[in-house]
Image 1 (spheres, rainbow, N blue to C red):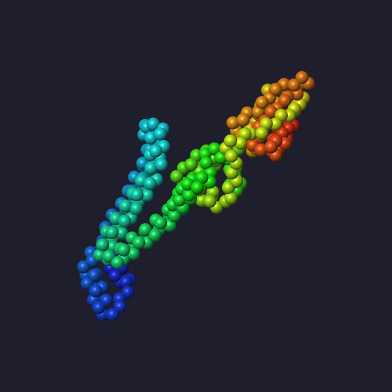
Image 2: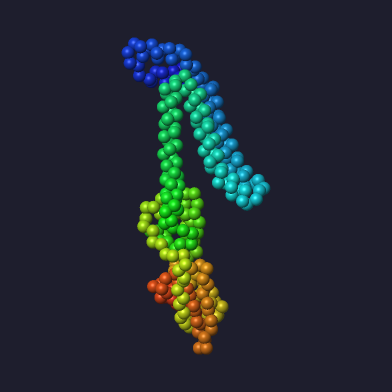
Length: 266
């Protein structure tokens, strides 16, 4: 018994008229042989291997960086289109003798596709609303939950935020719509803070300078573009000038720098 025979046996019949229609449909429906099912299976395997080969060979194709990035973005869409075409073709062929069952199968496939892309559509629409309302702009310093930094770039579904310690975070727009956004003006200048530190005994001055610079730049509240200024003092110490994102954090930055110097081997 082929696939169509199994489907016909599973379909309920109501009354003599329905039974007669089922008998006519079974008689007219073409039966799919095991060889044809094997052909469908091998077609899926061939498509899978084709996708794997394209993924493997793509980095080997010579092209410019911009074109490679463009094709890398288009590639996943192409894969989805190929697999959808394969599934629709298989459903349309194997269920050609059963229009009602074929319609239900295609409807189920469309439903699965809608559920799969729902998050993508939601992120895209959330981004459209946020940008239209002007809730955030490029250059704004924002805090969304535990993430705080400067808005660097808007993309189709996500926003890129440069953290204050130098890392870049990619947030879906739905996260911005779900959390309260604390926004500071992009024109707000960093707060300057100057303090003096002694040079640890036995530590080379260059090592001390590197430790100060590293500690300051890795601090959460220091802009990555603001290098600390270090100048020698008459008493042998160093004068350090840092720039903090807010005046209430200057003491925290100074404490981080002093702790880094205290950790140097004497």
